[in-house]
Image (cartoon, rainbow, N blue to C red; front, side, top):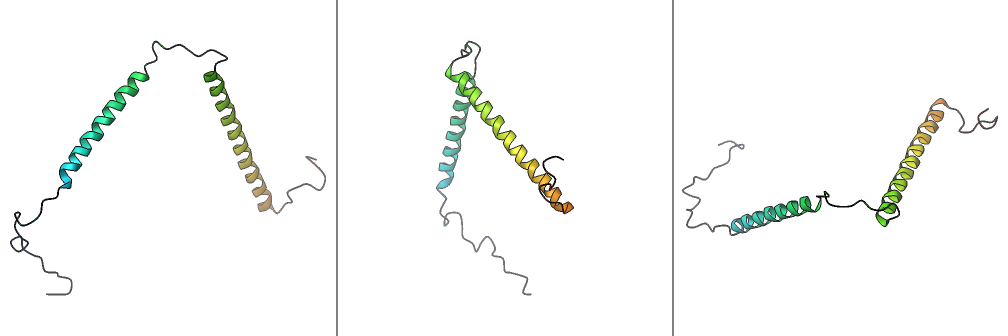
Length: 111
């Protein structure tokens, strides 16, 4: 036998099924899986029913819901503009560095 070969036990020497303890986690795992599936099914059904806006009315122009939606949109837009401009500024300053030019003109602004 070479160093790469390892002895393999035959099934008869490993013991019979009666000698080995049965894992008790398997029934628990099945029950947990069934519970998860049922919870997801109930949640999906209730979310679908709650999302049915066929009879719902639109919020008023001056309602808290409308103000919140506007505020979130304005904040997101302002954040996007600030991040985009910061990125563009970094790219332009990087180009000036690559070209070996100063970051500000000695002649003044945009001359």
